[in-house]
Amino acid sequence: MNPEDILKFSLADFGYNDNDQVLDPPADFETWIDDPRVGMAMSFFEQPLEKAPTPRTTLEHRLSGESRQMINLTSYNYLGLSTHPEVVEAAIEALRTYGVGASGAAMLSGTFDQHQKFAAELAEFKDRGGCMLFPSGYAGNLGAIQALLQRGDVLVIDEKCHRSVVDGVKLSGARLATFRHNDAESLDEMLERHDGKRRMVVVEGVYSMDGDLADLPAIAEVCDAHEVALYIDEAHSTLVFGETGRGVAEHFDVESSVGMTFGTLSKSFGGIGGFICADARLIRYMKCYASPFQFSCALPPPVVAAMRKSLEVATRDSTVRDKLWKNVAHFRRNLETMDLDLGESDSQIIPIIVGASGEKLFNLALSAQQRGLYLQPIDFPAVEAHARRFRISVSAQLTEEDIDEACNIIEDVIAGPLKAGELDE
Ligand SMILES: Cc1ncc(COP(=O)(O)O)c(C=O)c1O
Image (tube, rainbow, N blue to C red; front, side, top):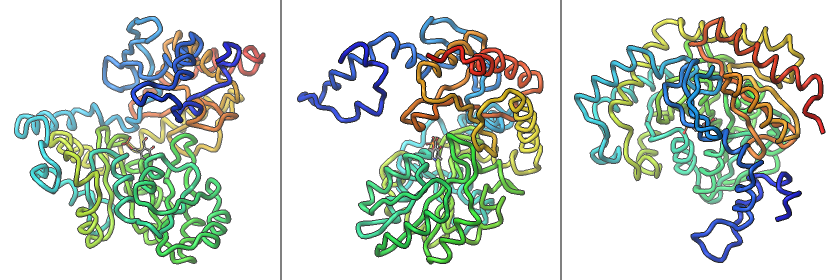
């Protein structure tokens, strides 16, 4: 690989391994990733946190090896439940009763009373007949789609759907078709074009890289017109959207058009795990055929006990949700004065779109980090190459002072240089 070409490559280029030795990575990948400029960019990934994912955390910066106090705008801990005292206490108590792990797959010895109670509580919360838990959100989408579909079926998904959905359809053997992001007309066209034995549509409630909401009223109408099942991934919207926190389907009042609803416990719940809620007969069937449920260890009981408490805290009143929305409004008001490209966000996820240059993105990330702001750069291929960005995850735990300080840094080290074109070639 020519050194001048190094920055023309990205992670999108090395997925195919042309090395004869299966246990050796591609030679070009090694040349690329060993280049100091790529090393600088990669140093922003897997930076170890040394404290809880709260708005003020401590991080070991991989480049310097130093521990630093940072304002953290990266975590999915939207409601601050990962460190909520009642949630932590529930985990500690369950840890003493049950030990650390489930020590078995859910079908065999891995189901505890905590799992059964929590599944029933989630089903009631989502107003569905049944619920099943998975070891992670990724495993939940993967397993649900793999168990629902088979060869001869067609899955039609929004082009921005999460990788777990795409991997699930690969495992199922069904055909995959994508429609243009949030475009109900494009969905309609795809459903006209792709016939199958059975069909299903998947969309997300809140899209994770853009923070925009699914246009569910229009999408549900198209699904209803074609009599096609609708599956919604409410990973980023559960506990956050809707009058009772059920998500974007509740927000738009289209829950009766949704056949299956998916959620994760790793975001607003502050833990780990995935779940789906649907008709009880279907859940009973899927428990027998969803591989990640059948062939992976069940969630640790202390995590489940903690997640039960998260559900209780987040739904007993709207305090934490109201605080989140107050923070989102304050953050957005500040950012809107800075002439930044904030995309189409309508949620607690706010992108700052920087443009096509990866170098610019990582240089800005470095300046932010030097000023004590932990802001995650999102590079191609995670987002389109022309729309590299930072992604702010607003948390209910941020104080107004945290937000103001973070915004001052963003203004100094991101908005200012972008406006002045300082990093343009
Ligand atoms: C939309 C969406 N679905 C599913 C997942 C997978 O969830 P988890 O990280 O809990 O495995 C994610 C994770 O980021 C996501 O953004």
